[in-house]
Image (cartoon, rainbow, N blue to C red; front, side, top):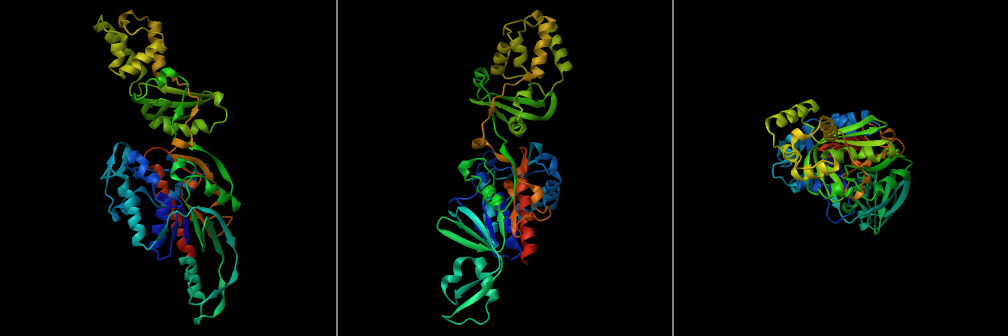
Length: 446
């Protein structure tokens, strides 16, 4: 069998099939594999999360996502990596990282697993087309090197021959086979697993070829868009705060109805906004066609209530006759942010608290807790950590991830209509879907 794409899902699928004794050919278009693994989590690789469910993912078929995740849980993932020498530690939010704090540890463990299970890895093999050929006969010169076209073909030939005759040519009946081809190579396999990823971070090799191959077999795609990508703004004052971070709760509304809400560390950048809540909410912003009806509201004091903040404001004004508005807010928020925020609210930095009229105070509080963030777009696939949308889950068997349209064709990973939030969820989908697809192949082959 052949697996296209040696990323997280492809490596996991390969190990699963290799453990069952299948001869596995793993193809990747790049010379060095695992680029996304190595760059993820700030090069530390957030392997999985303590608590994983379908609610952590975006998909039009969350039931299928749930079933796949339950087939290979985060606990199973931790046991798997422990087996290959990847020891983990848990950080805030239930995130698991390798205790070496290096993503290379994770990739090395996966590569070791492939090697131990006899997986044949071929790099610089960029697949451009896959065709399906039904039952056919082929002529082979017995005992010649023509049998070396792939380990898979050799296996089938070995099963079909009855008494080799040196130098003779014979017709050998072959089963249904996929013809996998690219520039300067071709392979044949009885089963194929597409683990080609999506369109995110194209510099790592993600170019959407898997989508085209899937469509060539009749599959339809749920709209693909960037996800976990930074947001853009035209507001020069906010962009001038590049490097400033603070806890923020973001809420996206459509026609004043909440669509999504996320909280976490928010980062101002030279192009706009980034950080956990921004990345998580980006899929919801980009996938809404009616952008004019969207509102992105920022709560810059997510750990406080409005009433609690109001009381502390009034108390500070009563206790100190000289405390300025800037000094008071800088006790709770970064100073550079406070300076910009006060300018936007047309309030002087040196304004003394007890000089602020009630109406102005209430307006300030409203702005701190419900600020309309000016978003003009998303950074796009160049900085997107994952692709939303993909191969429609209604067109695959939820128990095996085998295509319902083309027997023998399987899918795993980002190519499917599944995208998770920040926190190790997308890697867990790669591990779970890789195992499910791998088990499906084993069941079909053995």
